[in-house]
Image 1: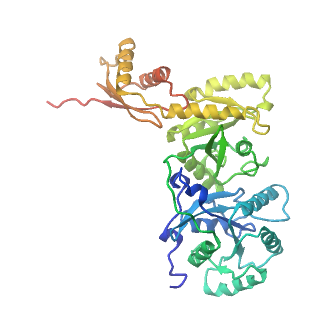
Image 2 (image 1 turned 60 degrees about the vertical axis):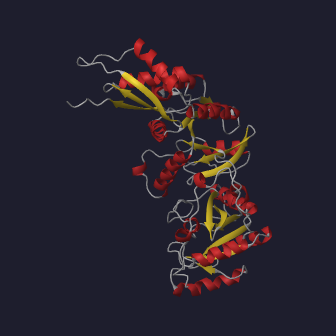
Image 3 (image 1 turned 135 degrees about the vertical axis):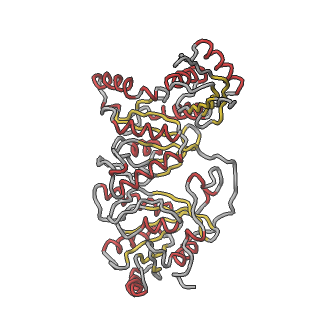
Length: 466
């Protein structure tokens, strides 16, 4: 079978997202790690998408889109492994590019094998030669991928990469899938054998998405929690593009934190990789159980912050609000911030709020108790007996207003689900929106529901046909 005819990784098997990565199983810990490295814009993220069988890594036809090291679960020929995508590696880089290169070096250190991607059309550059020297010092097995070989004529250019001294270059087209099967076979041969999958308790680490506008300190917070420079931090906004997963031990437990790209003003008006990064962020919120909204305490609460809050509420996720950069908040700013909270955050008064400074670590330890409270509220379940006893007292003390000579009544209620709490109310007629908000407020006063949105579904009784 020729490489053109071979099924792509997406055809034979696809990787699982973090949500479906058998959380709580030993697969997460024991799967061997393949680091994908190379100069900027050689097609690393496109190749990663080809390997994992889905469009997960943000791709755009310009260098520097990937900046952090980002892990994905993959399966090929029945063997599971972890793929680590990295930013462009330039040994002579400075500034932000130097931080990106440092993440690539760390990826090589933690990997079991390295997939070194080179643009076959460009050939060997001085940067490639420097990277090869670093790879040799690491002592890790290296698979050389000659990317952008879209047809048989381009294969001759790929063979010039023998001069790198890394063995046979594997011609591949990440864009079209040509040669991807042979490349993956070579990667599996370089990786240690995957231990037998062992399935433990279902559930795994609690999933926390760190979200917010660009440059409010999301990555700084993740680095402080992880106690290492896990993601690239720079004063320039929009440094993070791909959602970055990190398992972090806090308070004697393991949590899965997801650092996300800053959500721009409007996803539809964003262009290129910003558009896809915003979509990835929304997906990260869907994957999470709790969203930590990071707000720059030194600046006014903005329309973007309110839009992110609405996205979190619509997704039904628990919410913790973290006011970052508290060291920059003086007495005057605190006065105006209190007014903004009363005016703009009135719809999410139920969300725990903490003040912290991610840069120094001040009050970062308050995050775990806030997360615990939000998760407890998110998973709270009220028995049908308790709920209807509460509704009976509520309707007796505060009946629904009479509208057009009619007064709808709440006949019965039940909690359909938790996470988020969802209630179904059977009524004699349609309830006013204001009365629904009143019921929600009293539910919170009675049962808590800290840190979680509440969904009320009203089902008016149908009139019997005579």
